[in-house]
Amino acid sequence: MRILITGGAGFIGSNLCEYFIGQDSEVVCLDNFATGHLRNLDAIINHPNFTLIEGDIRDLNTCHEACQGVDYVLHQAALGSVPRSLNDPITSNDVNVSGFLNMLVAARDAKVKRFVYAASSSTYGDSENLPKVEHIIGKPLSPYAITKYVNELYAEIFSKSYGLETIGLRYFNVFGRKQDPNGAYAAVIPKFVMQFMNYESPIINGDGNFSRDFTYVDNVIQMNALAIKSTNPEALNTVYNTAFGDRTTLTQLVGYLKEYLSEFDPKIATVPLIHGPNRAGDIPHSLASIDKAKLLLGYEPEFSIQRGLKEAVAWYFSNLK
Image 1 (cartoon, rainbow, N blue to C red):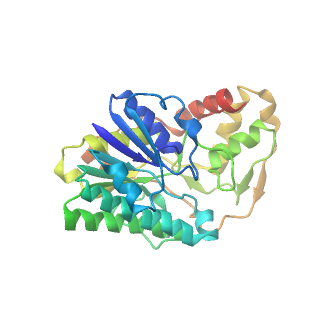
Image 2: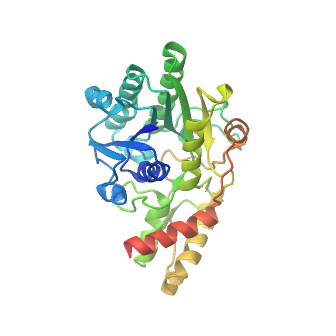
């Protein structure tokens, strides 16, 4: 099995690369290193079944090159972050929409068996329904959300018009090893971890009661593997929530982090917290129904937020302290 993983040097992509190399697959990684890091590939860079292509999905020729001889595509390449898209909607659209379309075209032309792509919980927009079910969405609240919804529309059209098998995975607040804590658009968990490790007070947006379905990266790996392996025709050409199916408030999250980090460094328990304004484009609550993934893909997430955070904290202390 030869798998192309776009964005393979990024947080989720590099974890997928390692997993599938461990499954004796041939893995091709395509990344332009805009947000990914070569260090994320240290464990597999010299493996005989691993190929690295440095290139950009905004270049169609590069996409065609990467798709040659590939059985499956796991498309992770994107510019994430709601604030980034609000600050620079044009680049987010170029990468997330034009780049996505390039990859669909290249996969179609190479006769790839299946195209599995990273969708997003941001697609639910202003829908107040909880838990979130795949067939009910609201209006997008950011340029990023628009780009991820457009991805789903394009994937559906390519399935209907060209017979390309597609599966979209709506990721819910993924966290875990290799998630970058640095930069202006760092995700909340690695950012808070690094601040605590430096004895800095993390800033909680709002009163701390906003909640998210935080999802450990190993659950995401399981979903990608199931999406590739599924032989159920009803499971194809659709989208799935990729989550644990439980929600945690920011206040609870910070409490877990302080507890688990303090096991490595007791001084962290004394770091005070700061509350700031709510962030533009944020929704108050997010919780996924994972019933569809369980029914059609056989998904059974193994990592709760507590178990995932304990593993993530241990990784950060081992690699960044």
